[in-house]
Length: 191
Image 1 (cartoon, rainbow, N blue to C red):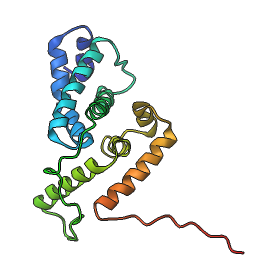
Image 2 (spheres, rainbow, N blue to C red; image 1 turned 90 degrees about the horizontal axis):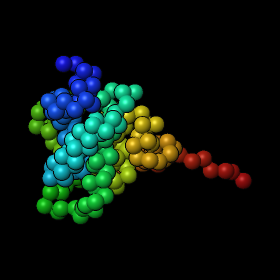
Image 3 (spheres, rainbow, N blue to C red; image 1 turned 60 degrees about the horizontal axis):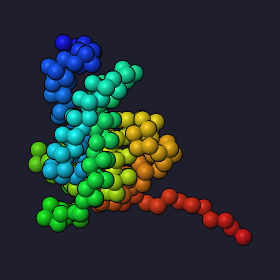
């Protein structure tokens, strides 16, 4: 069945349609949860909560079809992650923190698989160190591709706040990865 048909069947209570939709979305849901929560245990909890919220949302008719189902599922997932992180108020686990002083590999060549994996681990660790407000905005924009209005609605903040959080989050992320961004030049007045 096509996604649209599955959604219609799921709305009518077809459990196999709901199951198929959730299976199709699981990889993307878990990947988003992993990036937002910063560790596998919290990601698994948040992904489970997100899948439950998606299934309940379908049953309750919360998916209105104005966006793609996957986009709506990502928004539900982002909210589930934020809820999970707020509930946990996690303390960083020193056993899982990596040294970020090394930053990006300096090699100008195309990175091998090991370098790509190391880069991804560095990014995941740096994302986990960002304040939640910045992390959520950066992940939703740069990894999920949400527009500013969707992010603002998801996070329940003004669009200008979203832009600010993304800019500040990217700058902090660059610093954590060993690529500090220069401060913006501000002209001084001359007497």
